[in-house]
Image 1 (tube, helix red, strand yellow):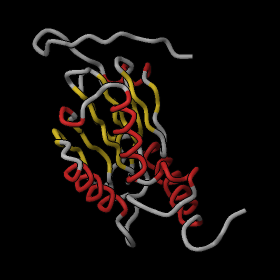
Image 2 (image 1 turned 60 degrees about the vertical axis):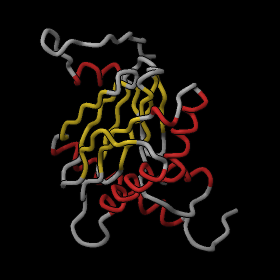
Image 3 (image 1 turned 135 degrees about the horizontal axis):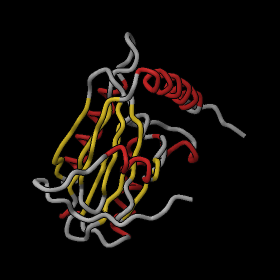
Image 4 (image 1 turned 90 degrees about the horizontal axis):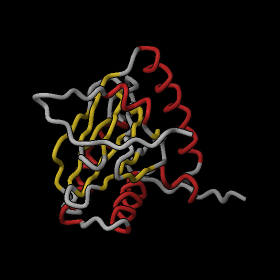
Length: 196
């Protein structure tokens, strides 16, 4: 089990925050998951997937989600992989923890084009999250989206700070392989076939 750490605000002119050290102490959020925290850093690895990092700065609570596709008609156990469900889960949990929608601020990352040719899932995810947040009247304070490289995101929820770094070529290949498997699995649950 990981140790709990207490974060304090850093003064940029005097202090340095090491995102890699934070990532080693952070809770990982995998595809289809979300996490809420007041002080524990959170991290995820993104290719064409997108994460929304949402904070209520006054309440000093925030969270992050990680979704694979913007929408779909998957089974309930697969629903968290879709943006609509992932965004609703994150926002609703923040509201349950005392956050107020009108104070929420978002930072968005991900949406890389991981595969050449075919459908650009990353761009669909980016368009979805921007539209969703605009509809919910949640301001996007920062975004690091698009491109062709996967990225690591480290998020300090109580401070609303998001660090983004491109992954190594080895991690890039692993993320591509994982996304290929996840998207093909998600696609098998769509349609009119009843699973039993």
